[in-house]
Image 1: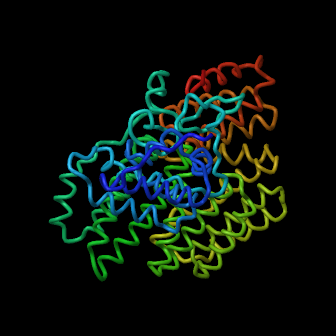
Image 2 (image 1 turned 120 degrees about the vertical axis):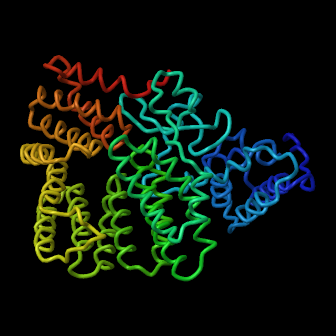
Length: 475
């Protein structure tokens, strides 16, 4: 005979009501807690505590459960109501849940769930409170480096404290005062965004992403209170904040959160009615799709970005570049080169755009082509392209230098020059340690696989040992 479920007390408070609604919907769907936990990617024991109102419910968990149960937003609306009506003496964890919401567990292209490989060591991504306070970190699992959510305490105990870093200090109270007195809040948030982009390239996203999320909460609240032109300007900025959060999340290896932010950016870009903004976000979605192993989807998204972009704009060139690389990943070299040639021709007659693609030039396209050349196995040309790009890169672009070094090392390894590859790889490891960039570490993992058979060659063992020192090794 099955165990009798604990009696719930929906009238005891708003979170008891939420837990009661969760169980009612779950049972109406004929789904066990274990089945729901597996579908929603939430720990089974936490799910039981959610139903009994024994643990604070992060909003992203409510969203994930609502989607898993096909509840049409009922659980999210109930969560919002409970959040607005906290009982006397409510746990502060409930209030903090909203601040953590922008790390949502929304699934997307290639949303991997490697946590089963490190069960017993890691928690569920995006959770808050106690042992559920997790960070996504690179871990050596079955010979490969994967990015998995791990309890912060485990990361700190491992000695890799840099991977468990929190946000740069954000003076929220003073920021609120500034906003209250400011004639142009849009200018304030635009300047913040520029500063965070510069900071990210110097020290990587692990420090910057939590700060950006806090500012995004403030920006969203300010936008909802605004009207007319101010509201429209703030919504456009909120869209760009969401896109930037997606970029940062991808660069710490949290693909699920990256897809969530980028999807929200696309949604709000349609609301703004700014087709340039929509074209840009479609391009970012194409880039994210190809980087997470979905080149066919990337082709469709890039084509949509090109259709949406104004003819003769730099956004059109960016879309063509995404199409080119997707063809390369699919192994279609002639098409990839044809699209790169098209991008150069379009750039030659493109408008000079102050906002979109101001960084786009022939050197950028050449570097993008080098990446595709490596994907096509044309390593000699790829290595030459990356060597030129590295020499021309300004010192302030620290994270980008690490990405270029890692790609150059992989290309040199492809030519058979393992000594040069290992030497460049060690340089890239140093920058990966500083920034925590998944873009760098992912390339270094590929390099590690290529160099493994040549462990006795000059510098190879040094490179592999250096890489091992910056990733977690599950017990």
